[in-house]
Picture 1 (cartoon, helix red, strand yellow):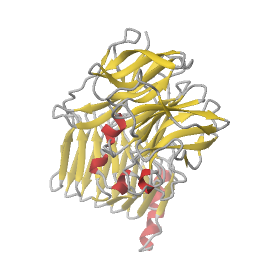
Picture 2 (cartoon, helix red, strand yellow):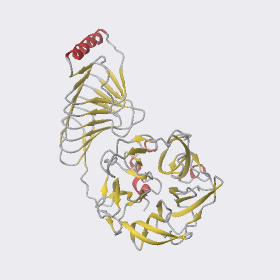
Picture 3 (spheres, helix red, strand yellow):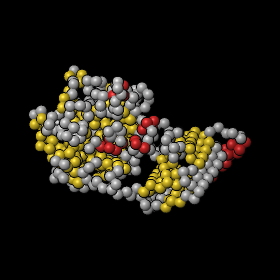
Picture 4 (tube, one colour):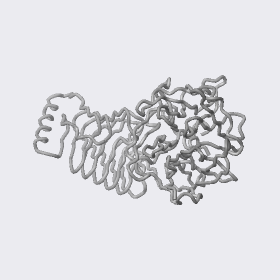
Length: 487
């Protein structure tokens, strides 16, 4: 099963210090601060049209603080975190979130924090305004207007939300929260959807418990196309705000959709805050959906597949739907530069992607739907000779089947390959042993529809993968990142 295509339905498929005291801001701290804030407010009152207040970086309100923003236009260029019994009040103001690079959450409430917005307008320069409510946090919106494609509240634990005479809101909840919305168009999304495709660990080499990564990696939206760094310290994944079948092409190819990178903190399921990993540089239109990172052993290049207007099929006569071509970008201190299409020697006018480099960097294995295969997508490989990739050849009948075979990855010694495939009617992630130039002895590791994207740490102790959720109506609705620990 092609997890990326199934998930996205494409073709076949830090906390900074508190902000400076400015006009319209009240901090629940010292009397001197309050006095200064009142004086500045008087200056604002004297100006009927005060200049906007602009804050760069993270807006942090914590440890019992109260921050009130009122009677002004406030432009926030960074994330917003309210925690530890703190309160953020928005009164008679226009609050604009204008982050250039961000993860999907514009605002996070945790502990017993509160957000209270009264007669205020909240705007975002992105498609969605994402707010996450945790623990016993509470948000109250009274006559609030939201200027974005929609505000989405993701509520967990015992969080509460009250909206009165406000704009339409979409609520994502796990069923244990309290949300009321008199006079507000309220769209409720229950996250406790029946999962009909629960995977099973079959291989005796791995522990039977599947570890699902928590926030901030997994969300109510799909995470896919993963790659764990060799040392296990960084995870790269593709995030989307939903299924592409529910998006316009502009939405699909624009942020916040794209690849993100997170740093591992401690346990294999604990990661820090994701940062956007910009693989879209060089896209002629400025629009692309990029994922599936593979890094050269020396760390100077990254290979990835991309859906962008430059793909070969899109420029073919007649036009061919071509949602995946493989690109390469040079890395400078880990940051990718403009991507270059590998061209017609490697790519075709059909889907080419879901790839992996061998540990020595000499071979590129990838899935393709080009004609001549055994059916579905087949695995092909290309060899680099003096920096030039050779014409791809099939990985052979021991690897490929009449079904979809895709998403290879390798052990650090190059002697074991993991692959998403179907054998004997059993879908899942399989392992193969190298025998000379062939791959033999396929063994199921994880059985289940919708599991794929295997990625192995160099020490072989953790196998990361993606679980695409399918409900009891046979509909895809989500995907999360998981991992296994070797016994």
